[in-house]
Image (tube, rainbow, N blue to C red):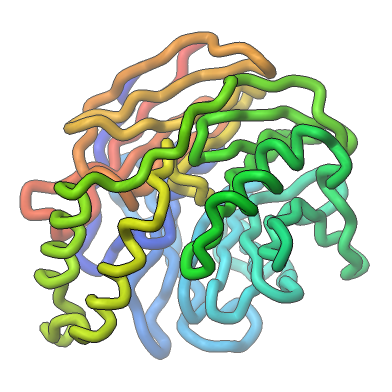
Length: 330
């Protein structure tokens, strides 16, 4: 690993939607904006703005709430959580296409057949592909034993209702990797069927009393853009639910968790103190681990694409995003 540079963002740049690194090392940020303000910025490794585009709204190319960002080659995808749709832009910010998600879901990236998404069903999440003609096809066969083991069973055992147990999914060409982020198990599939697995699984861990107390303090200290505290009733509801939620081994969301590099290796970030330990896999095999210094903890952008790895790290005042970029050698 060779560190390529550090990009210090502006105060209105936030990695709430994750940070996506492109195949040439450029970075995509979510921007805190309103009305006609741009919502996405593409920057180079020096922090120079290459382009900024989109805006708040419901029209074509507009976004209300950015849930995640990702690259398919040099095409940038953005997920609007409120509108439940994925919008793709070219490097100059020109609108390419929009995919509407039926129901509630999470897009991950393009497969050879269309947009891969995780659909949040009542019985268990489903991995699907939104094809160009608007139809929905299965990405992973629900009858595959690994699907029930890593997706169905955890959903039945751990779903609290308030926070459903959703798996992680990553795409590389015709290969899909999916993982149970609560018990640390991974499977690789091609043409809808699993061909490799890793991990025997661990017992789900629930928050300790110290972690519950820390979460409560965080909620009480939170302030919105207007400086107001969170509603006490909302704090009480969240404080009641938090002890019931299992602690994930790693973040399941695109732009925060596992991803493939250009050679088809799967990278999974594990947060520790002031560093991130990246586990690197080929199908069914752990190649090794790489520890990279980066503070910030959970809900910080983590992105791998091609020969580049990018992480949003904590700034001294934690008011602006500091993104460090590495080039993957070998």
